[in-house]
Length: 332
Ligand code: ADP
Image (cartoon, rainbow, N blue to C red):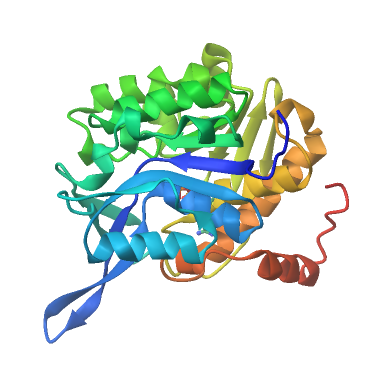
């Protein structure tokens, strides 16, 4: 695949929505802030902030929030030519509550909302043949027609030679049952080149909390070339065939963990792209470790601030922090 002028580094597909995040009470009235959200949209922004050329495929409503989301992506240099607007449906909302330690819980307002209404025939096939990485999650697999649209796009992108990246992003209350969610999440794994899962999803998908054992099971069953298992404050574990490693997290004072996993993956991919590699097999073990470390650092910076997108670091900040920590990144 060549690198023509219209070539993208990363195209992401799926949900884009407003996270209504509880921010306190005023005279006993709960106050919520409207943050741009949706994991695949976040990944596109996180990678674009760090220099990757990205585009997002999805759908918003023709309303204030839809305009706000479109403008937010555009402002962050994500190509929004493939972000559609539904004339009738509303933009999806997720009410995000935060515990005192910064952990999130979600309530979705999504029935018949715009992000679920993306149709297969609305997807620009040309774009799927002009990207090095194609990223999706499982939230756009919960409802039709976005489910068929997502699966179609993944298949076409893979046929065109893109590296398929996947973050299931399990959200229990979007599925009819846990069993259905597990089946659907697992059903796409044989197409995936880079899987990003969290330590909360590993036991759900493998029946074990053990990083070594759970990732081995996934790697062997589905032939996934690279697995990235995020471990919250502990950092991340990775597996490429029989090679594994664990990179520590960076200690920060956490303000809000929203967007940490998306920043992690966006940073990992942008670092891979920066190193001139596309397929996981092209990276040396040292380069994998380095990409994971950078991803841990970028994600830690995101957790140190409120919100997801506004909290994501850009290239200049990351370089500055790296320099001040005297981390050698000469091997990339
Ligand atoms: P997700 O957001 O997908 O649930 P995690 O909570 O595992 O995923 O976080 C993703 C990454 O964000 C971690 O691998 C780590 O690099 C970083 N991170 C998350 N929480 C913290 C924390 N408390 N301190 C430092 N880094 C963190």
